[in-house]
Image (cartoon, rainbow, N blue to C red; front, side, top):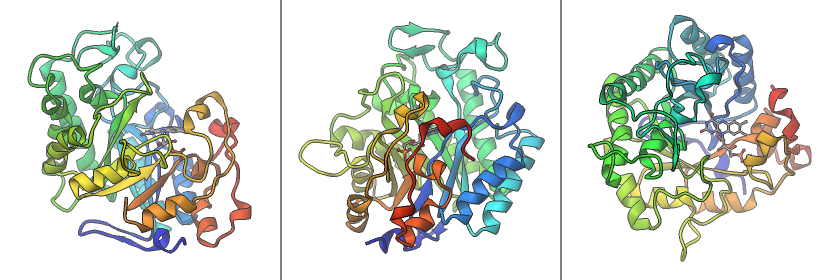
Length: 364
Ligand SMILES: Cc1cc2nc3c(=O)[nH]c(=O)nc-3n(C[C@H](O)[C@H](O)[C@H](O)COP(=O)(O)O)c2cc1C
């Protein structure tokens, strides 16, 4: 049953030992934004434990208001990049692959609690959510400088040997704030139609491609749900999803990472396909599914210290075997247990651990 999960993934740009991806998970263990040797050890253990591809925790691009906490790692500056270089080397030494998740938190930043508290947070319309205005809309100049910052971060990732980059376009952070009508009420070319709302991401993808190389993998993570509204949707039908995805795919995304709370939930009525299934069908690109793999309860409880019991992955394997998606991202189960992949491979299901929510700060 697990054979497909442990079949190498091969595209013209990327080869992975298996189909298991570590989902990006913020940790805030990088003092002043600099990833330490501990961070390298944390990822090294997951590579050693058999994870095919690691997507790092969100790491911020070079914009003063990209971060919401001084201990979130940054992806700019000599010291931080030296820290990331050590991470890359140690993951590669374990025969793993790794990509940074490039992040700008946008209006999710609470100015008073973040570095540069005097600066207002940035968002397409200055809205954290519909009706909650916290700043002025971003200027065109600021939008353009953030696009450049993503491109520079990707270029640095390329230079230090990362195996690609993931753009964080999900969960109601800056890029998603452009995607979502609820937070993007601009009337210029960055807002209005679906195409205009997608333009910020399209320009980032094109700039990353231009700053790296034609064969450098670009992953885009997106979600229907937002931290501001779990029921929000970018697309209500396959047709709308196609309208949303096509420009992004054409701009040069290689792999779409489709964030759901539970992978077994179908996206639209009349089909069992999940978000990754529809995305693959529409774009023809590879997709990553995610959401409660190996666990019963979704991850929202994790931030309140809630754990989750284990769940069989048999239905997941059926979908993978059917070719619904290509890769499977695992979050909390891998946070809990660096050896999760090897245990699944060796069928050591009795050794799989429950996710103990209390451990967020202590799991290493
Ligand atoms: C502690 C924690 C931190 C997270 N941080 C990020 C993040 O930085 N970027 C992101 O895209 N998703 C983040 N997520 C969401 C995960 O990537 C993943 O989509 C989610 O946990 C569902 O997968 P799971 O059910 O296997 O845990 C985080 C989740 C957790 C539990």
